[in-house]
Length: 280
Image (cartoon, rainbow, N blue to C red; front, side, top):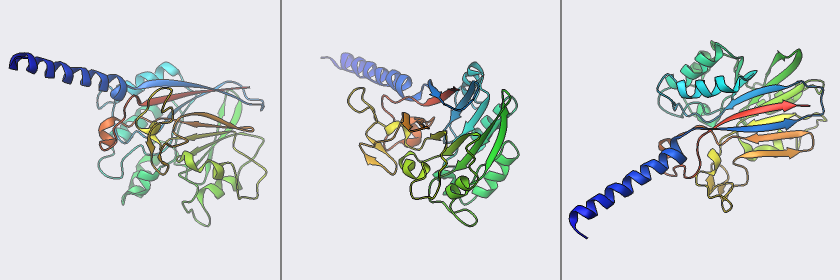
């Protein structure tokens, strides 16, 4: 093979890799989930945004995500943690939250990356100007004439004022409402279900992220991916929908782009915008 032919082959291979990365790594996809409940709940649609890590789509104005959210026409938008990194800027996350809050009720609960920042309280104050910050508390919202409560706990162990944020959520849990918990780490599902706590109540819907879809995915072979934070190799909980009695647990692959996880970039694992329909 001549040098010119070898050079052309290398260029073609590079272009192919770039195209594959664009399709499978950088292009956002919308994933829809159908949730059933025995409670007298009329149709509710939620857009769940997790693990943004201060990335942007469609330009720094976040027009790519905003357009997809507008297509979904949600009743509620929930931000489920790690909207920013443990370091670096916050403006792209705040831009998205600001723009979406103009048209939709928004709710936010932090993740582990926010908790690692020295300026996390400054960031929370900025978010509070946009939407509620849920840390061991809830916000009640009326959708289609029905009251829904949305709770937030970053994980099962982070401490609030007198007990963990999760325990504070359980203290105010009332089964007559449809109750949603934003809880970032999916591997702690046993705690989110109330294991070890003296409670007869449970959340109807739990929304998590954190696992980034398991980073490397191979259909039929690595359906939950190769690696996830806090779960290690061959993780169990990285994406999809799970059912535990009357509780539904949804795990989003999140919106972090491959370059945000450069040591273990996403492969065959596109960033996810979650659209959740709740129906009786």
